[in-house]
Amino acid sequence: MRTRLLPLLIVLLAAVLLALGIPLAVSLAAAQQQQVVVDRIDDTARFAALAQFVTDAPGGSRRTSTDERRESLRSELESYYGVYGIRAGVFYRNGSAMANAPDHWLVPQTGEVRSAFAEALLSRRSHDPRQVWPWQRSRLVVASPVIRDGDVVAVVVTDSPTGQLRSRILRGWLFIGAGEIAAMLLAVGAALRLTGWVLKPVRVLDATTHDIATGRLKSRVAVAGGPPELRRLARSFNEMADNVEAVLEQQRAFVADASHQLRNPLAALLLRIELLALELPEDNEEIASVRTEGKRLAHVLDDLLDLALAEHAEADLRLTDIGALAEERVAAWAPAARTKGVRLTGDCPPTTAWADPIALSSALDAVIDNAVKFTPEGGTVEIAVAVDGDTTTVVVTDTGPGLTDEELERVGDRFWRSGRHQNVKGSGLGLSITRALLAAGGGSIDYAHHEPQGLRVTVRLPRQAEAAGAATGAVP
View 1 (cartoon, rainbow, N blue to C red):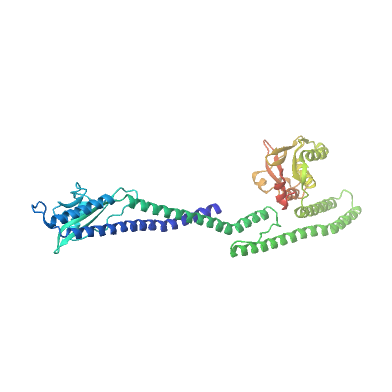
View 2 (cartoon, rainbow, N blue to C red):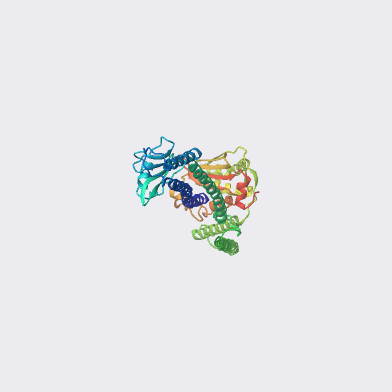
């Protein structure tokens, strides 16, 4: 969730910073240019004041005080050009030069200088020139009219290079950019802290939910940190988990108590049936049927008690030689398999995994018992132990009738038995007990088709202490 939320926050923060930074950069450029324009307007106003008294047209033969003023104006323009590198000139209405620096610079027929000159002839100073940007190699033109007796007699024009202006704008932009980057880094750091603070309780809640869903009912959420709403959610979740655990515990206790309490009355009932059978002929079918159903009920009660204990008991995990244990169970079931005419073989090389030896033995007994029970005479049951990555597998395959796809989805459910096997002895709890015993130690059991015929049962056991300990809430 953090990888999805954090980019969204960063994009929003970047958009906000850009929305603030871009207008600031534009405003800075406009302010820098306005400062230059105001300075040029002051310069043109000063030159216009000097040019007001130079009114005679060029080409006259007399050298009067007007000529002296023109020379003084030209000297000012040349000094101005020499110091600042800004072209400046005073031009009559017809475009001829009254004084200019450099001497060859005249009003062109087109361009910005001509536009500013024409505008000044209308008794208006130049409007603000178009904005100069750092990537543009343009010039800044400002023109002011020279007015005498209410008439425009000449125009003062300055044509400035913009290198320094563009440099100042660029430096200001770099400063703004550095500030934006610093603000972005601070914002990202704050977003990381904020998302971590908000999402940490969610991650803890997710992990705890997964633990409970996989059978570790004692897992709880640590109510610390995060927004008040999430802390309240964590407390509510813990209360819910406590209630669920209490209900399940009551259910297990009821099953165990009921199974245990019913055994004594059932034993007394079976004893009375046996006493009653003594008064009846030995081949009485009804008493034989009652005796069989009573024994079946006793077997179901024993399995119920075993299931309740398996779901409640803590696994005694230890590093176990799975090959040796599987070989032992193969040897134990070999006489039963021979009696039924089934060939039982084992490929059990030495390999270790974390398991409860007693629980694993009981689980393998249930799996091998089913395989031998449902394999017809002349069939084969094979047990193979192998290493598969971080797990050790015990695969039990048989050549029996197998199960359909629909039956594979239900196998292992409590009291479920295939409709084809209703007449076979059993309570339908053996594989449920097996699954509970394996899950307590971090193991699992899977069912699949065995080609060309039969069922494949795979028992998986963790080879790492951490994986096994996660099932019980602690590393063994």
